[in-house]
Length: 112
Length: 292
Image 1: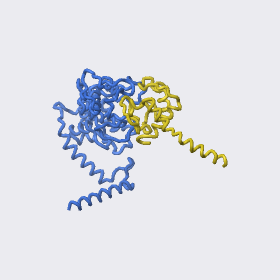
Image 2: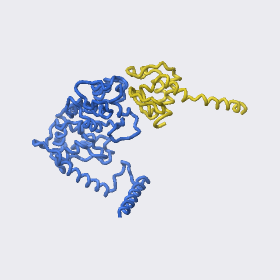
Image 3: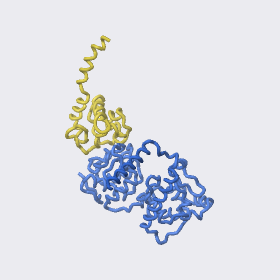
Image 4: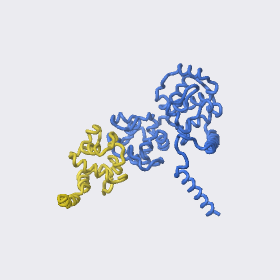
């Protein structure tokens, strides 16, 4: 009980480390919006790749594998591992970074 | 007076809604409509078909013909649901609602232009598909000729024709000649072709009524303007046509299925995609032009 009380403020403090802010920073730094439409992102209106405006509802990732958070993370981290012919560039993101972006895309837009 | 009519109408609509939404109307395929609804639908359908079927001219040399080729065509496209003399429909079709019509009876009761009308245009909510743009005119008339010949064909004679004919027609024979190949695509025909090739089952497409929250394939409103097709090849008219016809040639892993689209039809579809994306070459010419 005592321990939980001590831990509680720490947990709350952790919330300041907003994962969606981290994801937004990654999306911005990697220029995702130059090729994709991304919800709640100024200037992210590219038409090179498909719109990412309803990612949580999408049936497939990249039109080739069933859409799960795992598959989306894997595709962002290493697109050619999912589809060797994909035009999506490998951005050298770590698994954790890719997961942050995938979670963000699931959380925003239509169907979120 | 007008207010009274409007309120009466609203009341009636609300009543129908409550009736259906309240589960008082059976929408399952287990039970047919009440007899009076069933007969009312039939009368309405037959009146409309008789009126509309006159618009399609029956070829001058038309005659009922039961031969091996017509039977092979019929077996490829029709038996699954309708059965044939002495042949049951496929298992899945037995539970359809409405039960697909018996075409021996249809051949007795309906003139050729009506049979052709059903084949070409299909019938909403009946399970009957439109074969327009997926079967050649000639083949639609061949099947009409067979249906008109059914009333004089014994199950035994039908079985002999099945034996005599090719067991499995090349699936593309009838489809390839369905759309005339033209050097320039016709966007309006492309729009219609997308409907009868089931594109709205997976895609949201501007100008085609469908679900507004469908995300199986990408929305196609901007497909003509996107830099890549399927995220794999540069967007050129020639690549677009190849992609529509043979998706796995472009990307073997793609979930987009090969729908047996003929080249002329694929060109029309591409023309429609470029038209709604406003890329400036709605009529897909023979010479490919980079859309960007």
